[in-house]
Length: 135
Image 1 (cartoon, rainbow, N blue to C red):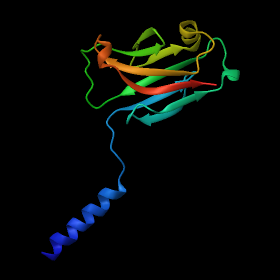
Image 2 (image 1 turned 180 degrees about the vertical axis):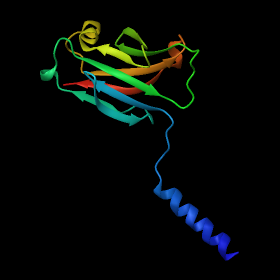
Image 3 (image 1 turned 90 degrees about the vertical axis):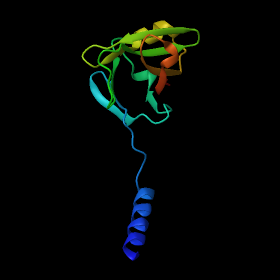
């Protein structure tokens, strides 16, 4: 009985020390250099880019990973800004977004751009993976 009680206390203590486990995670490259990597918890992760350092040909590349990929499913990155949206399809497991295209979508006054991931062509299945902040 003492052993069972000891094991239960040990397991409860261990559970309190561990963080939430995530299956989905994201690597974001800025001009093909890894700058951010994070797990997908709530989609409120913010990536900040200084507008003064942007160049015309800059781009971000998004690698989204899950342990249950659907290779037969179509997936895309969805960028929504006000009433406009753009879909970025995958090439070699990478979604590449030219920053000039984002500015063409929403103009130079864009500050926070939510980036969504969707599996299938139904935008109702999209969920936010991060927010791109340009200041």
